[in-house]
Image (cartoon, rainbow over all chains, first blue to last red; front, side, top):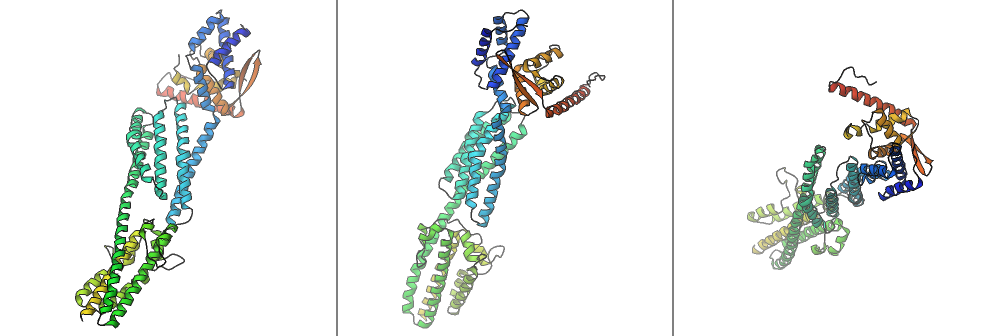
Length: 415
Length: 114
């Protein structure tokens, strides 16, 4: 049995070093293997240098490195931890989101934290870890890794999830983030994915379902962007509510003039008094709704309960409306009382007017069942209504009552 | 020569089987033994063998011990307890597979591997 000299061993050692191995346990083992191989050849009478050349020929260029890569891939502990971590995170993050969504629905405190944490874990940690694990899995199977697909996928997913989070939390920039993620998806990600799915025949079902899922997500994304339209609706509601406030204020002033000119001061006085009472009842309800919607709306409500909508926000929030109108466990709602005062006010007006005006009164101060389902007036107008929607209904009532007050006072003038 | 694809799935079984028969073996010895047993028809490349060995080791089916041979270090592998039972399972599984494939491919019915 031939045995290598120290010099020859050094040559082989350098040969292995040249390949750039970093995993020393494998390095020693491969050196021994190489030595055995060459010794066996030398036993057949081949010179060292020739044997080395033969062995070299058998090893294609980066073969040793590949062995290292594959070995590390198979045994890497970090990778296994990562995979485990991915599974745990994949369970925890969506659970947080679901619990957060339930909290949000029930208006329990802590919903925002849960949702933010859930989305953060998904976007910042789960997505990159998933990409890394998936890339290694693909390599382990000896297939080529479609790196651009993963990079674009992670970026798109990150922007998309951030956009969703911003949207839920009412932070600025949500619309832009969602739009950008849709653009990247359409322009880069989906074409890449389709090409990848067509090429990868082995995992067709898997790829197909991922594609379907992505397309569905895109649908959701576009819908969320479309929610911006509802923002425009909110703005137009705000404009209407503002002008209603101005009109009712003007009518109130002109009604005061009418009161001074009336020939029946007693009757006119009662009507004016009742009108003022109902008007301030409605104003109080509006102020309470605005204040309850969000702490930041405090500056929008004056001490006299006048409302400055330009200082208010959270127009789309509906929880305050249902709390004030329908009440909650602790306090009774003010809706029923409002309906009662509207009805008694209507009856008072009807006692004092000609039939022509009675029709308008019935129509403008109607509080009976509404809509196809014959819903009660209260739930038709206020159930699940956003703050600005409720304000719209209420300011309109104020305009109606001031208008009718004026009409009735005018009739009293002509008598 | 047996194709690499066919060999890939059975490499671990071969290693476990050899280690079951020999108390301990090192990498080069395994390739030589396989070559001898198959009369040169199966040549394990070290690119296939070492990753498989390290994988088996990280799965704790085999353990290793290093021994200095002059200035070289030789790494011997031996079966662990769970490796021994895994070896039996894998071998049985493979025998079943070959028997079934024999039926499917309608080869010599007298084929007896057990």
